[in-house]
Length: 379
Ligand code: MG
Image (cartoon, rainbow, N blue to C red; front, top):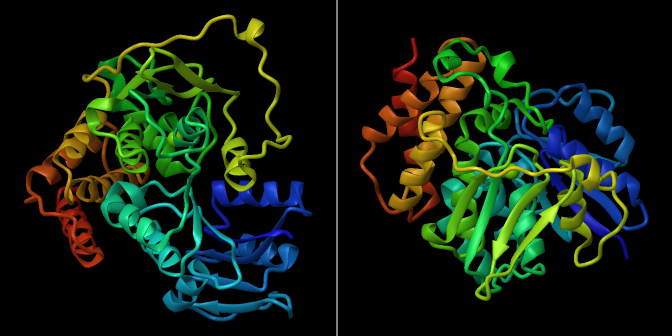
């Protein structure tokens, strides 16, 4: 029996790699539904090639030519939600970026579908809704983010296993060696040139500010039920150790491989089995050394702002995410300097009164409010 997958966010970097994995193992996996926020040629090419039973675009518009006859095509919010809880799917792979992923995750859980979760915002902003809902519905949440997959592997695929510390690694991003006083001169193209990973634009900028690592700390708190003090972040420029778990006896397990998202993506679908992937064999002699150091608060203020939000909890991580999305888009469009990303986030957070994250409606309100505040600071 092939595993049936609904892929939410098929055209992005992660979505395309999910498709690679499905094409590598056509006897194991079948894409029954694909969905994306906006269309474009790639989405229709995918529909034609993959022949899913259902293809959904979130954005309203015309029904395009080129959808194969056996694929039912629909547009709009309702269609997108149908794909997120697609009745015939065994697992919903959530690969959309941004706050939109939260609704996708909650919809899949409501439909009692196991989730492979590559969207970090759904846990950052809505982890306190998503985790208990998943538990009540009895659905599995399978981590896909490379750090959280590494932790999960070190915990023998048991998110509930005991540990004494989770140690996340951070590459430091594209600007890690730029002198501090030159950071404000850096343009989007500089920050987008990540030394180790090839990813979407938003997350690549979030790596350069290390806001991404702050998000990942919050994600880890939810996925592994970990208080902030049991999570440590270390700089590791080679991106070979994807994260580590320390245990009560002092042992530390690490998961190592060359950076490739296809490994955690494939493992999310095949675990506990491990099958050949596109990952090259690790040449330790050639690597010869791995380096670790502490994050620098002067270089990475966004990371430390995220830790404050993690500590404060409630809807503050949701506000952090919203302010970050606005600031990063503005930076990508050349409206603000790199160093203003942190300033806009900090200022926005200062103007938010924290509330308990008790419902999706409240988080939607916080998200909109934080975006409004952040936008008001743009030139
Ligand atoms: Mg990651």
